[in-house]
Length: 441
Image 1 (cartoon, helix red, strand yellow):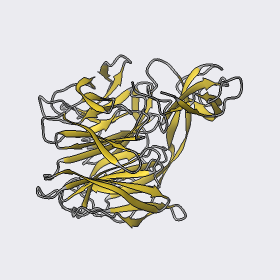
Image 2 (image 1 turned 90 degrees about the horizontal axis):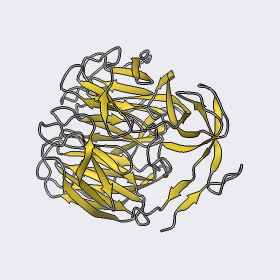
Image 3 (image 1 turned 60 degrees about the horizontal axis):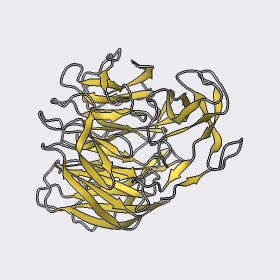
Image 4 (image 1 turned 60 degrees about the vertical axis):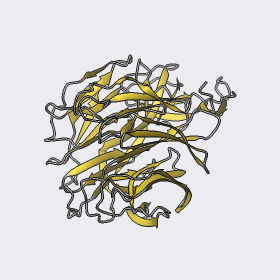
């Protein structure tokens, strides 16, 4: 099969190389000609500006899913209590999110329980249903063109769904010559892979990977994901692979432990660091991959939260945000080497229990879902911060690079340094060509 490349070449490099990337040297000095990995980073310490959001009554199972650029988000709710069918868009002139679209859904269900934007922000996938035990669940795809969101296709994927059994949706960049997108869904114990060719949704494979209530997954990269099942004796924390349009039911390994409570919260861009729930104090573990699939626990950060309900690495892996149901509701750590240390609190801190946290792919926004436990009386349902962002350049050493860095929309790219520089200086990089439509066989 042909491999298609995009880019310009120049400076003695062949067609396809792109030399207009600049970034700040990170981790250690770089010499001209060094192989480097480039990515986006969030510069939290230069300010976290509060972006105004609609007043939501926060619930314990709320989740807010932003687009890659943070210009819109979808509100999801994992249980039975409230309807969620709106998309919200950022009005940049007043720095405020506004409700702008009621999603058109054929299914009589009124609650968006999971959502995901495609990496290029051209499409939105949602799972919607009644979550009452008798309603149906649908997977719905929409096309996004500016402020217009148009439904494309709707597929019923379950005849009866109990409350709390719909967990996650994830877009995966496909490495083949057919449909350009793959979508993974998890409903109860069933994990299903779908192909999406921008008009049609096709089920490719389905497997019962988990044997317990409460499953879901964290995306590892564009061909691997990690289960979130936490019950003892099941496959929580196991890494599964997508190969040739099928879910390989034999796990590649696991992040840290398969015992109770050790399911993943997030994995860094490079796949080198992860944060997992732990059954012993302080309730979580930050772990590191040695490059051979072996994970080991790092020292605990200097300041620990009372509890942990969610965590997320920033693009570039420099920062780790941890949220809690008890004060302090937010702690942000900065990573220096393998050491995580608390930085100063933002000027505006969450004042209620927080449940979920995520960074946008462009590194410019931090979303935090807040709310009490199932009463819906807390007005502070969402905190959103605007962040500074830029480009980082690191010398490739061992395992600080995602193996799919040269594919479209990945947050990391690889290349060759055109300049030398010390930490903190800006250098130019010639990026490896972006590959499109490469066969998996």
